[in-house]
Length: 396
Image (cartoon, rainbow, N blue to C red; front, side, top):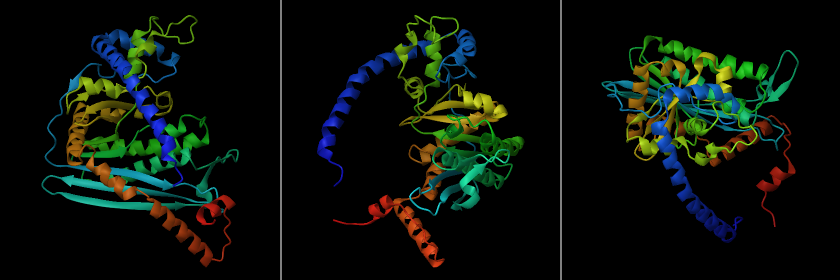
């Protein structure tokens, strides 16, 4: 056994003791947050958010639909469809000279009502050669598609597969298109992708797919949403941190600032709504405070709300065209609750899509062996690093 659990055991005990000590302080901070949450003046807070959001380093939710309000779910449609996609990938192996990556997309459509049915499959795509990098035709600059950028590529493939699935659902059938995780391409936001990379991945591929999904919704009864389980976001809490700030316009670089806002730092949005909402209820709708979205998403700005389930609080993200339609928001709310009841606390369509998408350790080993066999059949000498060979070889 390579991991010495005896060494780790004492450290785990220390972790548990630290968490226990922090829990009491977190409860006190949460109680203060809840008081602010229920008492903040919406109009004044909205003005302060608008004036201050660019002056703080943390994302601040916009109050698109109030603050301390809750909504009961409408009745679920008697017949509806849920389309869902999820993905996994095998990254480029930097220890092998045969450079490639694989993306596997799980695709699910579930029909409920008088004509129930299900479609479950997966689509695996191997990428090599020119697919390994994005090259700017204007200056020849190349950006390898690996790591975080491969995660972005996979998210785009998931959304494009979802659009194809949605096109097969009859227009007169209420339908929810569902992806796992955020609608925000976080893998593009930390770095400067102002040029060709952003244009190709975000503008031409991701946002154009959102355009087509919006057009699909033109007849009504169709919505797109993303589902985030166990969210750790604090955008609503950050709005309340601004409310605590003694300055009319927050300025965290101001000399002598006592940072009263830190008194509620560490509390998450899900902490608030777990205490505030009853099971089945949803929160008000908020506008994402992501500067990346505000700068680049145009008419597809991301909104979000929280839904209280039996075991957790989930975050639902929707594009602007869904958030602006109360009927669509209500449909998303009702269908998500129905899906989670069928899936023991998690949307069953996403659960099935994940099962079709997952690439296991055995799959990865089988992929490697297939690759080696195919290359050997072509009499191609593929080199691997000494580190890679050492890991695959037993020796004393």
